[in-house]
Image (tube, rainbow, N blue to C red; front, side, top):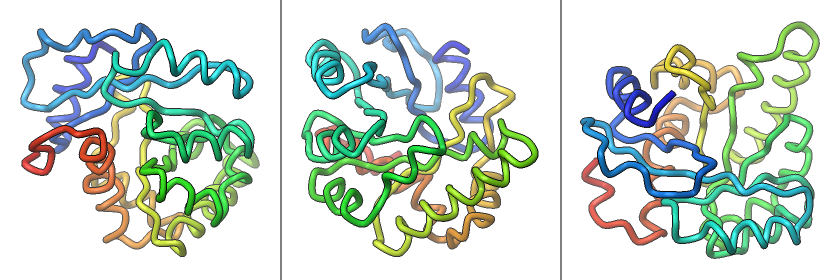
Length: 205
């Protein structure tokens, strides 16, 4: 899905802004004509901390926000405290076991947003979905208990996988997240990333 298509689809569903993941690491959004504001996101690549550092050195400054996969406690702690990392995400439900109060505190102090992805609940089936629900409920409980700013995402691969805000909130309630916190997690909290990054006028969106 092209950035402009993502923006138009997101606007139709009720979003004012969207983060579009890219692997190119270049600003390719100047020609986009959409009411929905598009920000470029890059997910760091690598299997260990040293590879993550090299990847970050190549990409920082070329995109709007940088996200690091929490593959281990070492990488999670590094990313949470790194001023050049904006989002800490968990590429698989098994990695949510790393999420605890200490990581939440480090992320808050380092101005890094934690990401809670609902994609496993849509992607997996049967027993795997039940297990994912258990893992996500535990992770959500930690985030809510620690009053941590976090983002709820669905990681859509195409326009038909996009979920309207009301649908995201409904699924989040299954994880035990109160509606008022869910609203912040898909609106207010993601904008903190941009505010911390120095973008002006983000709250007007």
